Length: 274
Ligand code: ADP
Ligand code: MG
Image 1 (cartoon, rainbow, N blue to C red):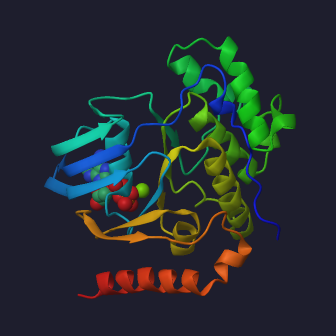
Image 2 (image 1 turned 90 degrees about the vertical axis):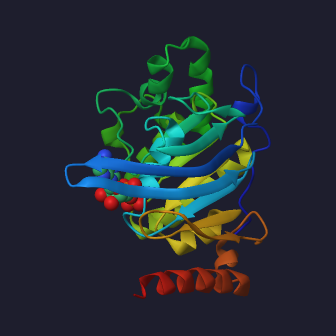
């Protein structure tokens, strides 16, 4: 396969949008839920950073607090202890520097593709007119330029998820949060989407915090992988992925890919032991 081409200029680089900055800093964060059965510690003493333009994956067993971590970063949930800093400012509520891509694209079926991409702009009360051009450029980048006036039901699962990514990027966030965005897709579409996401990330230079269950997905995409322990989630290990970019199908047969995947699998095996 030919190397993944990189778009020289991003729609987000042009005009009224800012250059990427904003690293994320998570410092000694605890999150304890109050439940009818008493307190439930979901996250404990969690600390890590995401640098500008860095692709970081969070890999951890089910129920270890990954989605909770995302809610904390979006400002929807205040931490019980510790601090979360975005673009140098402490997170105290929802912030525009963050874009979110969910596991299900959750598109509004009665709105066209472009109107779905523009939903966050309306929600934030921003001026729609200048963002229509950005939305069309983003849809072009997602290879969906011809589908702007279509409805979600006319799109495949992978195409819908790409609309979800465009919607996550429409307000030019410095940090894109992705919660298992490909988990609902079939295996082949998932592999295609990995390449698409790498291409989009290389073109937009965003920081990405990517949550996944999948070791190959994390190794293929990440600069660093943060492995979380079973609940309460804390950092068990940070693994740097030094594979060259762009990564291609050849990357998967690179012995270094196998070594890194094995190293991560062993961490999970150790976790399962009593
Ligand atoms: P993950 O995304 O890693 O699977 P979650 O962050 O969704 O894990 O959940 C972590 C733990 O917190 C789980 O034990 C879950 O049952 C619990 N939990 C999640 N949300 C709530 C909530 N709103 N109230 C109480 N407990 C919750
Ligand atoms: Mg989750």
